[in-house]
Length: 189
Image (cartoon, rainbow, N blue to C red; front, side):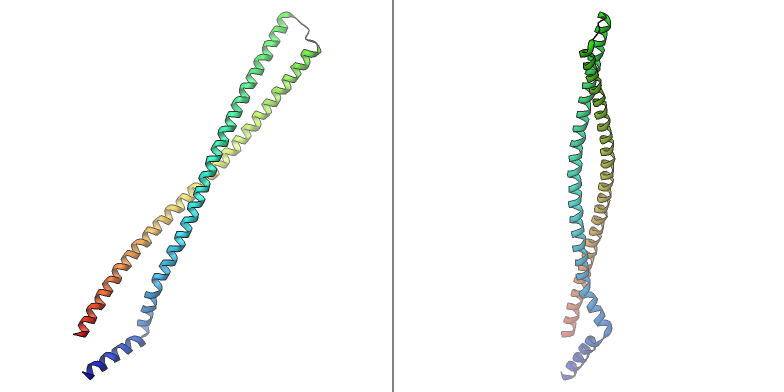
């Protein structure tokens, strides 16, 4: 019985002093920590991307509302412009038909209406320029959103791959534990 114990102790001490065995032990201890760190990093990055995606969606919705407002304002101004043009034309027709001298009052009103028309046209042009700028901004945001979605997709794929590797690692670990148990059982016999 003493001889058996001596061999067992010497095998155990050789396994502890074996540099390859130490490296394997260190690797097996580091792997889960590294994978866990990577997984936490991916999770944090995924959360940050999700938050950015939500912010972009909120901004996009706000911009859609602004576009709708600007389009409505533009439509209203164009309608007012048409009404003013029609009234101006009707007044001109009446004056020509009656051969009236409008005098200073009518001239001033016509000048005011002309200034209003110019102002409406200027506002319409400004609105169209704002709409164009907004469209460009919306396209940029859409491109950014697409990039974020692509990043999310890549992160999801990486996460799934990591999950698969973790599952394979767990299966390997269970097999090794089973083999170790079997080896211990055989050594005990």
